[in-house]
Amino acid sequence: MSPSSDSHRALLIELGRFLRDSQKILDAWNAYSDEHTDLDGWPYDEDAYGRRAGMRDAATAEAFDSVRDGAHHLLATAQTQLAQLPAHAVQNRWVWQLLVLREALDRLDVLHEKWLRTRDSLPADARPGNEAFDDALAEHHAEAWSCLDDWGTHGHAVRDINAAARHAPSPLAPPPTAAAAPVTGRAGKVRS
Figure 1 (cartoon, helix red, strand yellow):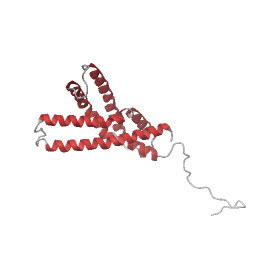
Figure 2: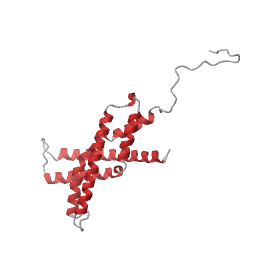
Figure 3: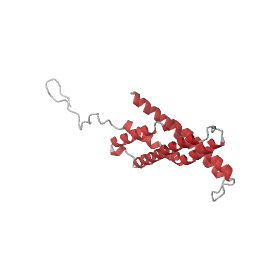
Figure 4: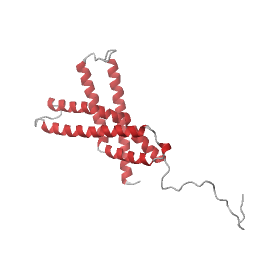
């Protein structure tokens, strides 16, 4: 296996970990939300509900950190793999899912740059645990959450496309023959 395929495999493992973690985070959030809202979906305690949503946002962002640097590579590889798959191996939803993931990643890139500018503009004493820092970071996580949720919802398409590509016949393999050539015996006679 080449180094690039090793790194791709490692990124797919990290993506799988993110998908599992984000699902656990979302399940915990849904359970909390069901217990702490009325029948119309209004929270009983808006402050507690907001703090819990902030915890969900931060946990999802932290889970995505291991995928973030390789996400562009994962999408580009999935796009290439998808283009090379035979039509019968392609799920119709994959093109749309890759588009959703691309748009979410582009938005995350913009939000990350915005966060870096915000962080750099904070007072010099603003560090984690400081109210100014924590509030700015919580706002960043809240803005990024829907994009991270898109990755949690549709990221499995990248893994599905990779699996389909691994099981698809290689374009370099010779095509199968329609019928086997008859086997000839010693005097050139055809045996059956």
